[in-house]
Length: 219
Image (tube, rainbow, N blue to C red; front, top):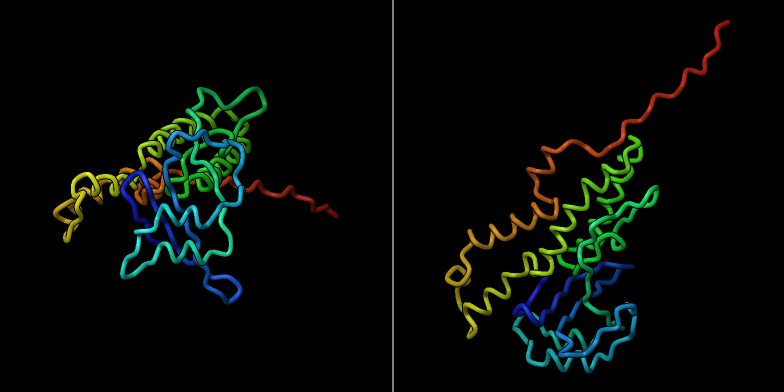
């Protein structure tokens, strides 16, 4: 996967193997420049020529961004929006999960992954008859992640590189040293709950299977 940009405009691309073919999925991101976003439409067909015009100069010796955009079979436009963290998820026997609970900018694939974690923790809480424990565990964690994603999460390195070397650079170590890059990545992993040490140390969310009742009959 590649990510290129300056913190304002961004291009992401990665291959997908399907049916014996290699397809390229890409995301082209840019500001709306004062336009009001359509907050409810996530599958609006996009004009490839219009998208390509915003990335016309993005040609590298290893990646032709305008060419990839022009060669797409289809493209769809959707707004980059989130919601403010909620003060409460649970109302009686009803609670929220996934985007309904913590809609966030799609940084680090956390829109989907955090919903999966929600479901695991919710199942554990329900199995133990403690719905409040689900919100107590997940709401603070996802609130921190929502706010981190508003600040670009680990993608902040692209913004830093642009600010520190607007004319380009030959050695990334002179712009953002490895230790700084690694620290940004490690901090985000902890916020998102993907830090290996934290995962290995915390208790499992697996629900122990209850033993089957003894159905034998004494003769």
